[in-house]
Length: 416
Image (cartoon, rainbow, N blue to C red; front, side, top):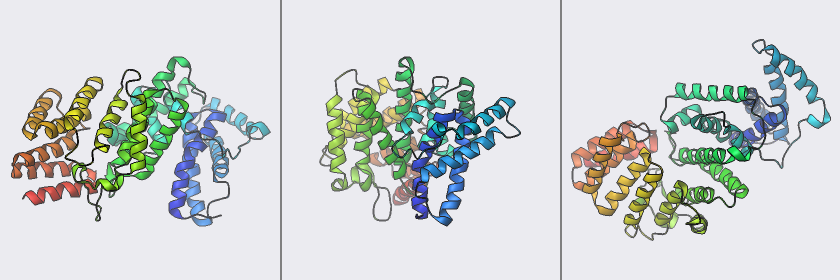
């Protein structure tokens, strides 16, 4: 057995969906299976830290998960039906065809994504449950992504698992009738995982590479399974082009570096090339969707040699198009930035004020912090240093990411 603490944590994160998939595929009961997997992971974190990682970690986790699942099904709180099924499950474990195998060549992550996006669940519950079960996000991180409190999101996830149980959801491929809707939900899940990783909601690091890497990996899998879907291609292109800037987003002291100040020689040319070729290959093939539009915007940024050479009027036009397809608060706020860059801060502030009057971006959970950061930047550009400093401090107070918070406070301090 071998393994360091960091290696163990990464391995557990990688193997968790595979173990959950193995349990659900063989025995159903998603809610019980997830609880069993969590306990198997806790047991592994204790045992492996002391004794090292076993030669076949997935098989080890599946074996412990099976045992714990039987215990949960047999618990005093379980209904008689579950107690009967526990006996059947225990017998099944002794049948050669139902034994836990290493499954080293099987990746259940995508299948789990489709399972979690079951039509019995609401769109929000599909996304929340999948982020928890496959994406590995904490309830607090998911709550932040949706602008909810942690207890509210915890209740939603619990209810989603109960709904899956009542619906008798099994580890089977979706039918043609609901596959499109479930793939759409899967794409939203992967998008949120990537966003949470690219700018973490809390913590002392700007990004969580584990989440962005996992989102890209799963989106590549989705792309392989749906090679003719232009929106899946657009989503992957968007992730690659955005992730290409990761190395330039922080400086030597881990301070945040805004886009227009980044050293573009640090951008990853391979990711830019792959992402640009991908969006070019599907652009205009069919009706353009939101992910393709966002990828097109990212491509305009990626192909500009300098910040000054960025085609901001084109970006502003793309955001207007995107807003018509996806009229959300974050998209509207991004259009404000593009308009200000293309046509000046006064026009940007006027648009921001108008959108606040109509849609209250300054009150929306998903934009209230960034709305202040954008406003402060535009006030600074107009020469209102005192107003900008005050609003920068308001924005800093609303973020849990320490890197972003330091950046905003530093901007405020420089302005007095």
